[in-house]
Structures are given as C-alpha cells and as structure tokens.
Length: 388
Length: 132
Ligand SMILES: [Zn+2]
Image (cartoon, rainbow over all chains, first blue to last red; front, side):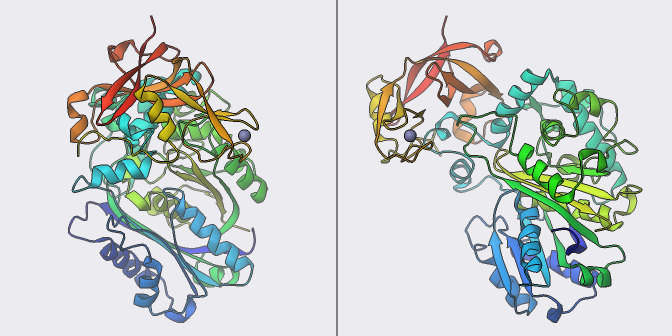
C-alpha cells in the first residue's frame, strides 16, 4: 500500500459539549472548516466515507448519501461504516484500497460524534449496544466496567499499580496543556495524587482515569500520492495498515490482555517494513488509563511487563523518547463518541504532515496510530510517514 | 428502566429452563465435544448444529472482576457497590456474573466461587458466592 496513497489534509473541530447541535450540524461544522482550509472543489472529490454520528434515532444510517448531496459531488465510492473507535483508520484503508485499485482518486473520510447521554431508552439501548443483553446485561455492565474487567486482569498479570495507571493520565494532561484545542487545556497540571483522590467509578478506575465525554469530529482527505504532493506541502504517506477482529467477547475464551492489537500491529509493521524502534510518535487509544499501557506491550513498544516502567520514566511525555497521545488523548483532549478514533487519526496525520502546531514533535517521520472498537475487539493499526 | 431481564430466545431457552430448576447448563457440541455458553446457534469451533448440553458443577473461580461504584443507570443505584466478575467454571467455560453475599473487598482473582440464583422477573439468574 505504500508509495501510492497519502493523507493530504486533516482537520478537526475542538471537542466540546455541542448540546444545541445535532450530529448533522457537527458534520457541517467539520466539513465547513475543512473546505475553508483546503483549496479543493467538488470536481476534485470522488469518494465519501463516513461513520454514523451518534444519532440514536438512526437517522444517520445513510449519512454518506446526505453528505454527497450536500457537498454536490458525484462519488465513485461511498459508505457509512461502523467499527466503533476502530472505524477511522478502516475508513482510510477502504479509501486507500479503492485508490490503489484505480477506483477513486480523492476521498473524504469524515466522522462526527456525540457521546451518548442518559435519557429515554438510552440505558436499554446502551446495554444492547455494548454487550450480550441476555447473558451479560442482567449483571449491570457498562463500558467502564467492561474495561475494568480487562484492566484488573492486566494489573494482576503484569504487576501494574493504580499509580501506574494514574501516570498515563498525568502524561495526557501534560500534552493537553500544550494544545489549546484540548478540553483540559486550561485545567492545569495533573498529579498522580489528583487521580487517586478522584472518586472511584469502577475499580480500578478513578474518575480521572477515564476519558472525557465530549462531542466533536474530524475529517481527512485521502488521495493519490501525486494529488497529495500537489495539495499538501508535506503529505502523510500511508505506509502500513493492519486490522484484526478476534472472535468473541470478554465472556468468551481467550486472553483478555493479549488483544487483537498484537496481530493488527504486526501486520501494519510488516506492510510498512518498519519495527517499533522506527516509530517517532504513537497515538494509542486511551478510553481509560490502562489501555495505553496494554497497547505499548501488545504493539511491541515494550517487553511484556515493562510498559508501566516505560511510562513512569517519562518516555511518553513531551520531550520523551516515544511521544504518545500528543494532543492530550481522549482523557484530556476529549472523547467524542463515534468520532473518538478520528482524533487519534487527525492528530497522528497532523504530526506526519508537520501541521500539529504547538504539539508538533520534531522529526515526526513515522507515526503509528492504534485504535479499536468494542471492548478492545475491532483493532486497526496504521503507520503514516513523511516519505513513501 | 427496571433491572434488565433476559429475553428468552431459541439460543438460550434450554439454559434458562435449566436455571429455573437449579441447573447450570453449558452447551456441548456432539461432533467436536466443545463446551461453550448458550450464546451460539451452532458450535463456534466446527459449525455443527448438533448440540446438547452438560450440567456444570456450579463451581469455579474468579478470573477477573470489577467493583462498580457508579451505576450505569437508575435501577442499579441501590446495588452499588456491586461486583461484576468473569468466572471460569470447573468445566473451563467462562461466564459473566455478579459475586453476591460477599464484601466487595474480599473478591480477588482466583477466589473459588459457587453458583447461587436470583429471581429476576420470570427468570432465575445465575449468581456466584464465595465457595468456602
Ligand atoms: Zn463442534
């Protein structure tokens, strides 16, 4: 896949609580902002891929058709897809495959999200969406609790402490303080004690171990490499991609902590011809503070059992050897529901494009982005680079 | 919303018929001998649809757990803090349940547990208590 496909632009609206805005409003804000920045016109675009926008009534099932109509384009490929948090890199991959095969030239991949709020039918819809309603639902699971099951096992097997988890949140806040778009930009620095003193949500997660519910979204422009060179000063080349959906759920057999990231990561590295040592920046999905630790090991950045020490050394902080979640992460930047993975993708692409502004990492040649949907089940790993 | 009650369907009917009479059943594939939860209409290992069931001993151990301090919605408010666990049955099958009649602080990975039942609407739900 290398050499042929680039991300020529990446744009995201700041995550906030856009309470008065519907998901279609958010799609318009995202596209309006991007089109004002990108010097392109309708004839340049021949594909639209989107995710659903968190519209619980289901009006967003065919959102790609609505966006094609509003944008006034004729598309050769179009799709509304949903792999949860893993959707966004999969969108780029679907676009890249089409471009690779000559079926499209320039594809808009856009995502908006509104984090679900309590309300009529929301609780029942939540249980049905995230778990097996009949065999799991009666026991009172919700997203944080399902992650809690994985995290408790991870901490047990790898000797990881609550302080180690908190240190991940501390790092995310350090990055958010550099990023004016982050929701916690003005919140001041965070300490391990702050995290441990915040209220317990579900063990092992304190309130500040959790990501920050938000609304928002973003868009990337995926193009033939020659168009990428024309439209961007330094396009981000799609160097490698891996996707893996292991069978089962948390209640099924299989390791809870050796996730599909092991295989999706291996595939992405193989396709890019790179190893973890070649990666300059990593965006690792941090719905909760435990997941970057687990992913650092699953993706091969750390030997098993070594991630906590790595994070405690400051390695993932600003100025560290492997900057992680350079925009503040889902914990301090914001978690935008259906669009959560788009933040990692946009911010990863901006690092490779050299347009990450105050959070730009010097010499961000190779950027790895790992996201997943479900409770760590739909895994997507992408490696972007500043050269083919 | 009241506490969630399972929907009885063709995949799980035999399971909940079992719990109603105090039997914890696990799905068994007659072709390849796999054991699995009543979550599949066919064997997930060989796709045979020739299935029956075995009786589980009802004993197992906690593989992992979480103590829920913030309820997902109102009907669970008066249960907090409650424990959700993944229990590995003696037969090797994993299932989700609650650990009940036990201080949450006492729950740990490896804790031996045994099945108990809670009436939930028309359904008897398998729960687990420490097996002392
Ligand atoms: Zn079988």
